[in-house]
Image 1 (cartoon, rainbow, N blue to C red):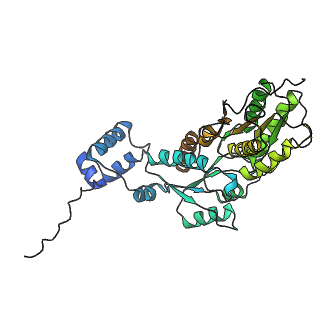
Image 2 (image 1 turned 180 degrees about the vertical axis):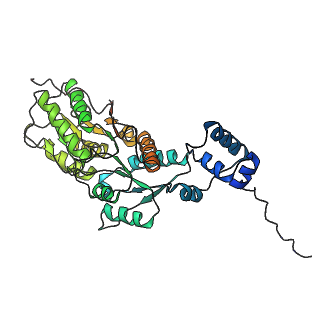
Length: 355
């Protein structure tokens, strides 16, 4: 018996511009311009075309849209080159926010890693030359950032999640890192702490610089001394935080509270404190920044300053899409405030200190 050949399933016929135009009794050019919201097509016609397109299941191809409008509907995101400068949960939530927002418009994200021994600018330049992206989202910005300078020079659209020292002409969304650490110090002070130390990050990064500045400003405003050794710079991960905290605990007059530049740094401090036989939240308070889920799972749960990474990703995606399409934004520079989430890792100091 001859084997029966499997027949391919019939596929749903694609609704073309020509078919849509014939159905509407309009020219293909008019339909195309209506779908792309050209102002020379009346609002009534645009709405009618859009309604019938939805009813017939018309979906424009990204290639056709790009050719018609000169827009590459893909956004480039270059992963930070060093793992110690970005927490994986933050990155996952931020990227999810970008991708989910762009997907609403059938846009894509290209995520590119920085190879060992290369700079982020190298990857940005490669993606520009490839013609695969219409613009970029940059995060973990440095105070002087070669990626930003290069994109300005090339005239390529980009949005920063963060800032540089000179970005008055940049489009960015940032959290007010300086105010966040003023609020953090004020929270600890309100609990009764006077000896507050700060594990600062890599100060070439804007967020770390601003958080350190906020800490210093708050301490000065409250009339609190910052003894030698109370600020430790260059603490970028849990390992360096563990070492730095061990040094803080060995000081003649150790702090009763430690403010980490990130949650990861704060968690490293908690590990060193536990190893020293002290209890976080009773003998010494610890506070971080990021609002990472791992902070909630810590013992005790970590007090933190944070802003939703997913919300930030969605907002940045909206900004870069508008910038690529229109070349401008009504609100090009956005500053959000961080939210205080108090948990059990902070409490009153073990004994009242003189003010």
